[in-house]
Image (cartoon, each protein chain N blue to C red):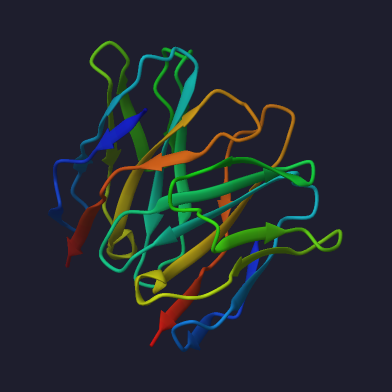
Length: 116
Length: 114
């Protein structure tokens, strides 16, 4: 079974600064995907970024980028130029291959607070 | 932009009652999922559904739970006899085909069992 671990229950950052959220995972599979989801106080789950395991290049979406270290099974999220609207719970998630039943396995989450 | 919708947003029920949570996935998506999140905890997978049948289910998804796609648009989760520990946020998600792997989540239904 796959596991996802987020070791930082809470983090804070000043507005406009950069913050990195950590995530490690464990799997014996080679074909998988990794995601970061954001959950603001409304509790809506919003997809932030995804990474394919077969791609060496780190994914980037505007101010959000990842550092994917496959050998170390590490998948961190970097948020640049943090904004107040980035305040949310962030969940790292793992998904196997592309089979029809591919579930997302989530980490425990990191509560990020952006301070003015 | 198409989105997943869920109704109701909040459901309060008495222990032992049946509840049906409803979801309308994104129209061209063919994979459907239910997840739950107990307050303060992580999101947990319940069940996935494809081609009108369950693809995979977790140990949480016992005989009290069932899913159905009664028509071409709705996807429902039924809990037959609710327990206090079923109180949680229930999220529906859907995914397209063709190598598109992102799961898009609805806003959730908050279920409170008294």
